[in-house]
Structures are given as C-alpha cells and as structure tokens.
Amino acid sequence: MAQTKTITQAVERLGYRVTVGDVAAEAGLPLMEAQQGVLALASEVQAHLQVAESGEIAYVFPKNIQAVLWSKSWRLRWQSTWEKVWRVLFYLIRLSFGVVLILSLVLIVVAITIIAIAASSAGREDNDSGGGGGMIFLPRVWLGPDIFWLFDPRSDRRRRPRTKSELNFLEAVFSFLFGDGNPNVDLDDRRWQSVAQVIQANGGAVVAEQVTPFLDDLGKGWDKDLEDFMVPVLSRFNGLPQVSPQGGIVYQFPELQVTAKAQRTINPPPFLRESPRKFSQATSGQIIGAIVLGSANLIGALVLGSMLQDQSLVAELGGIVALVNSLYWLLLGYGTGFLGLPLVRYFWVQQQNNRIAARNADREQRAEVLSQLTDDQREKLAFAQTLTLQTVVGTDNLAYTTESDLTEQEIAQKDKIDSEWQRLLEQRGGKG
View 1 (cartoon, helix red, strand yellow):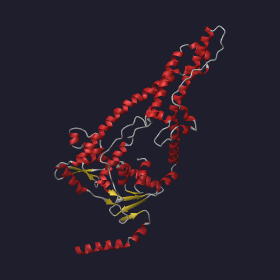
View 2 (cartoon, one colour; view 1 turned 180 degrees about the horizontal axis):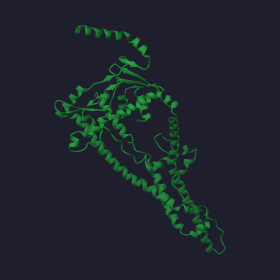
View 3 (cartoon, one colour; view 1 turned 180 degrees about the vertical axis):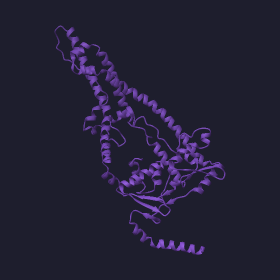
View 4 (cartoon, helix red, strand yellow; view 1 turned 60 degrees about the vertical axis):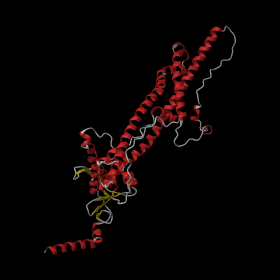
C-alpha cells in the first residue's frame, strides 16, 4: 500500500477534491496502489464520496487532513518525533568528522611536542656538565588557518557573513568526505509523475514516442520495435493498447481520463533530466582548508610514528603520549582515509556524471523526434486524438454524495427524477 504521506501530499496539492486517477498521476503511483491508498486515507479521515451519474467517484477530503491524521495515529506522532530527533542526531554525526579531524591533529601535535621536548632535555643533560640552566623553548607549531573560530561565539566578527547556501567548516568536512547525497534520489518518482502528466495532458491517449523521453532502457531489436518498453507503463496505469486502421499502436488510459477538475493546467517537461552530481557543496576555500588539515594530520601521524619507536621513552612519559601511542593506528588510518576517500569519490563522481550526461542526451534526442514526425507517426497521433476523452466528476452532475442524507438528496433532485420518469413514459407510449 502506498505510504500515507505520499497520498496525503498529493491530495493537498490537488485541492482536497480528487479522483483516484488524479492521485495516481500527481504522485506517480500505480493505479491499484493509489486506489488502496486513497480508500484507506478516506476511511481514516472520514472523507466524503461524490458519485457522478456516469458512475465515476470523487473523494472530498477535509482541509485539516494533517491534523486529523495526527490526532488519530500514535504511529504518525512517533514518526514525526523520530524524524526531528534523527535530524539532530545526523547533524551531530556530520559535525563529528570535523571534530575528530581537529582533535586528531591536536593530539598528534601535542604528542610530538612532548616527545621532542623530552628528547631535547635528555640530550642537554647528557652533553652539559653543570651549567646553563637555560630556558627551554617550546617548538611553535602552526596549524594553518585559524580553525578555532568554530568554537568562538564571537567568530562572526572575524569572518564574512554566511549565506544560506554555505556550510560551516565542520559541515564542509563531512561534505568533502562523503558528498551531499544523490540529487536524483527521487528520479523514479519524477519519471512516473511526468509520464502520467503526459498522458493526462494528451487526453488519456498517447503514442510511444510521447513517453520514451522519460524512460531509460528501451531494449533492442524486436523488443524495441514491438514497443515492449510500454508494458510497465500499461501495467502501472491500467492502460490498453489500441490499433489504428493502418496498424499503428496507440495507448489509452481510461482511468487517467477521469478527473475532479476540468480546468487543471498540466505542463509536463519535454524529457526527464537527471541532475549531475556535485563533488561537494563546500566552497573552494573550505575544501582547501580540509585538504591542508588532512595532509597535516597524515604527515604528523607519519612523523609521530617514527618518534614512537622508542617505547621506553613512551613508557617513561606516559599520559597523553601513552594515549596517543595506543591510538596511533586509528589516527594514521583516519588521516589516510580522510584524503584517500575523497580522491576515490572524485573520480567516481566524474564517471557518474558522464553517464548522466549520456542518458540526458539520449532522452533529449528522443523528445526531438516529436518535432520531426514521419507519416506513420502522424497517423498514430491522429488516431490517438479520436480516443481522447475527459470525464469530469463535477458537483453539478452528482447522483449521490455522502455529504448529506439520502432522503435530502432525493428531495433536492425531485424535479430531475420526475422529468426522467416523464421521458421514459413518453418513450414507452411511442413504442405502444
């Protein structure tokens, strides 16, 4: 069964008065799934049914549909709460990679500094017989750009204002490592929504050439010539193939020809376009900063590794040095992965974008076929026009509605019923 959220959003976008075909087209759902979802939702929120004289059904949902669902379903309340909690948790997870990078670098620098001071002091004690008592100068370690503005509430005074499209540095670290998600995660939903919009915009009857700009694999040889790629479309929207007098195939979708609104404007896109993947939404400066810190982390880990070879010194110093020694392979692994993973992902993104560009070009080329029709294609389109039909379930031709009592409806339609009986009597009298 379709998710309640998907059905609800489709009903809201359609203005709360819908047919099953309207919902299936708006959400891109299979008709059977849309029908089950609409019926379940109508039962849950006590929507009204309007039955036209032709037998078609429209559903009228309350405007406060979200509030009704919220008050009735503990599951929806729990799901909404969990979504809010998960957003916070995931945001903290994103920040944690940058925090670990900074902490790792700090630990490495501190450990190197302590070991260097200890080694320097031991050397002077061996070489100096008594003298000096000179000052010990700590090595000055430069960590690159001022990264500690992240934790300073007054940091806004030291950097330019942040726009909505930008990430802070900790967010940028996660974006540098893993990217920002698949921009085409809803591609399949957009595909079927567009196909349904094309069908509705053409009166419920189309030819294959109008649908192919939204599909991917059309097959080869006989599979393509026989238009086998249309089978999933027919199955999803309960379509019927119709053969023209000249033998061309046209596809009719009766249930998508029923709508609750006559003046609804439908403007489907010319073809299905995939968005290219971005390596990262971080700015070039943030990416450079992440690379600098990652490189410093890796180089520092390698230097620290050579300094930790003297385990007796490590045991003597203890404290932070002992801690870093126990975590050394984790620090080295994180530094290596921090630079290695984005490098691999960069080449993978380029490969994916080449494939996306090829698919977009292929679908765009199919869309251009409609501007250069052959005689056979024109004949099919002309035959499709004869099958176009739109059944509007309006409020002026209702045979029954659950919004009022049946007796009240019969009284309101008394004149209409009497005229219908009179017509039938006259027909029988004429035959007699």
